Amino acid sequence: MSFLEKVRDSLKYRRERIVEREVPVQDFRKALGDFGIIAEYKRASPTGIVRLDLPPWEYFSSVAQYVQAFSVLTEPFWFLGDWRFVHLAKSLRPVLAKDFVAYREQIDVAYGYGADAVLIIYKFAGERTAELYGYTKSRGLTPLVEVGSVQEALEAVELGDVLLGINSRDLNTLAVSLERALEIAERVRGKADFIVESGITEPHQVRAVCRKGARGVLIGTALMKNPSLAREFREALRSC
Image 1 (cartoon, rainbow, N blue to C red):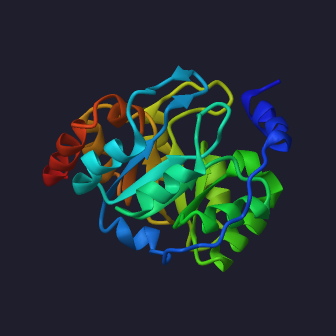
Image 2: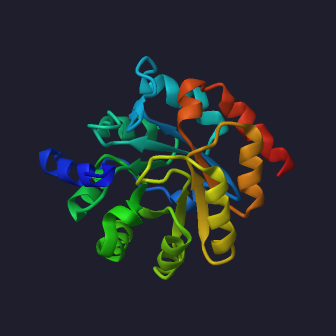
């Protein structure tokens, strides 16, 4: 069973309630400006524990001045995520709720907890991508459509006015290749707004992504392990 198959199977064990939203929706794409850094809070990944000794509020408050938005993992089994983390992050910056979305109800949960954007993984949502994309927009949220190949990216562009998340991580093998993501970026440049996700560990890589015409970059593990890098990543953009 592949990783994505395991995730799909795990959805039946999740019990999440829909709560009433208490905060206004912010325009996630607009918040990125010309180029935004999205700092991700994730305690674990399918490859292992990232960091458990860093409380979410400490992380959010330490990097907020250097980033334009937050990404928060809400998947509980492999990423040890929690919807309450979205609520904490929202008090400082716009928030992307990052999960494996297969149903409309998951988007309703994200809306209730204060998310401004919702991740829709093309490979995971499959033929329901367009439906989930449209429903996310109908709730006033920004859909971030994650793609991992040129074919997926070009098909996703057909959704219209889409914000793509080009993932450096292969969801089949979990291997990371920023070079592959940049190749995909070249193919969609001028066709859609996009950000690059995963594989960013050095400031010069942020510049490389910026120079490909991206609207932003999502950085997770590197900032979780060393939040002080946020300032270096921001300063790297001065020469973009």
